[in-house]
Length: 432
Image 1 (tube, rainbow, N blue to C red):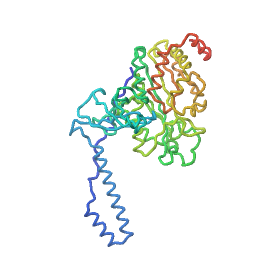
Image 2: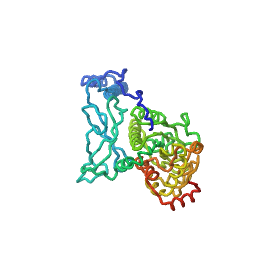
Image 3: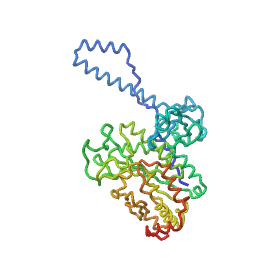
Image 4: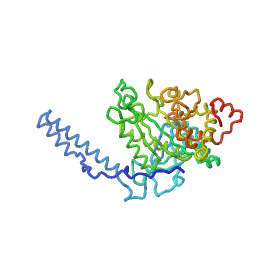
């Protein structure tokens, strides 16, 4: 089983010790200020007004921070649960908060809830109620304390999954006995791009212009190479605190673009962890005043796109002689290439061009240590005769529930005919 990393205590929100005392603005202050303005002239008094207003603004900010950082634990057993779900576009995240009155240990102990589906593009106005089913719990790195983030999926009042609920189908696949016995592991590499708020242009790029060509930015350091590191680091720590199995992060090839990795995760956990990690990233970029983009090709031209490479293995692949199982899985994936491409993210055709470390969207290919293939196998896997494969086709905006469950379905449950297998093996020049 994949080892889940322990939450970090470094991200806990605590009451600021050095916060300035609250200083509300009273009517007496205002009248005193007006008198001073009348006596001392406009230029001098306006300067004093600016200083006073700045002090007042800082005091208000400090009071707000004090309230946001309040630790409720010593005063009440109640805590806040942030219910999170996927909206109507299939990529947008929505959330709302509610008070929970007693400690819980499992998502099933949380109450179901509802929301207005007509406002998220998931239900008509005349029958707009959509029901939230709590499915996974994480610690809340923003509120700290006993507060939690809750990943939910979505149903009609009659208990039927709505069309945008991809988790339901994924859970069915991962609960199949054949799939359970193979203990599928996933390691997902989530790439993303940070954009300047007003111009929607990558962070660190001159507005309306371009930086120097790609080369120095990948894993680079320095003010002229790395843009947004604080956001990446804050996200890393917040995910560890939340209990997400995040395993690393790095700057990417295109400036303003970053990647983090989640895994190894088993089965449905992979989707839950990626979605909550995306939610946390959305919240951090919101606080930083930066726009998060999961567009697979945010900038046209000679710039790398953004993917969500998915590393995958089964129990059989990880055991001695597993390389044969890996090759068999690649055969199956080649036979269902179109089905996978259609489910691997919107706009992926702009990214999968055969350039910038991608394979052509129209052609299935595989290779050892080849980042220009659909499926890459590592040198170490080939050497040891066991290990994992990397599916390089998914776009950065892919649904992890769809991608992970489709990989399991194609490689474990799908049974092509012997004739189809033979033709695929011949086409791929593969001996199985």
